[in-house]
Length: 217
Ligand SMILES: C[C@@]1(CC(=O)O)C2=NC(=C\c3[nH]c(c(CCC(=O)O)c3CC(=O)O)Cc3[nH]c(c(CC(=O)O)c3CCC(=O)O)/C=C3\N/C(=C\2)[C@@H](CCC(=O)O)[C@]3(C)CC(=O)O)/[C@H]1CCC(=O)O
Ligand SMILES: NC(=O)c1ccc[n+]([C@@H]2O[C@H](COP(=O)([O-])OP(=O)(O)OC[C@H]3O[C@@H](n4cnc5c(N)ncnc54)[C@H](O)[C@@H]3O)[C@@H](O)[C@H]2O)c1
Image (cartoon, rainbow, N blue to C red):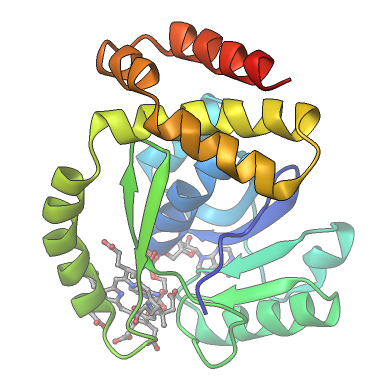
């Protein structure tokens, strides 16, 4: 099952600062969570993230998973190249009731990563082969990316941003679900809104939404 996790404000610990650790940091950076990376060495990109204060870093050579007890993480990702250590980290994380993952151990992990197409940080499309072939998941992503980037247009991204605005305003002002739904579709199909979005004028489109909302009441 593919789910879109809400990690906002949560602590995620990544152990291992190599290729896999970096991939996980990159997936988490847009999620507004706190990222702590623990490793005895790192690469240049990770060092840049530390300098930019996007992640916290502890340089440490681990022999077991006891260090985890000092923290209250929501999720723990073991990405070292030491299988026995990764397994110990997963076991410790599970005993602390957090979500656990090891890059080399899908059986022991609570979840797997999909191959994700990210469009304008607004739409995510995940492809999974359920562990059958990560290489094929990547290949299909690259193929599908070409298509989705044509299908999902700049206007659609603006419509999503406007819908986000409109549904927050509607929740506050319109009492019933069916009326809110009707209103949101009327915003999507309104010719004036469509024109403003064509003109990339989100501010005016938001003003138009508020007018439409006022006209309802
Ligand atoms: C999608 C992606 C997301 C990501 O990692 O963020 C991802 N793997 C990617 C690439 C990739 N990984 C590997 C190769 C080499 C070729 C190959 O093995 O096929 C390539 C291809 C390459 O690098 O070109 C090696 C590998 N992968 C796993 C193991 C452990 C094992 O199976 O035991 C080993 C070592 C095996 C060994 O030692 O031989 C396990 C998993 N990898 C998954 C996801 C989960 C299943 C997803 C699915 O099936 O759809 C799962 C189960 C758990 C997980 O890690 O989440 C990412 C594409 C990123 C992109 O989109 O660009
Ligand atoms: N899930 C996937 O898609 C996938 C893909 C490729 C590889 N892998 C697996 O992931 C694992 C990691 O791969 P990688 O390419 O990131 O390796 P890597 O060698 O680039 O990185 C390993 C990191 O772990 C750190 N580390 C190792 N032992 C440590 C210890 N005792 N204490 C602290 N830090 C320690 C190292 O300093 C290094 O930063 C491998 O076992 C590999 O089989 C998984």
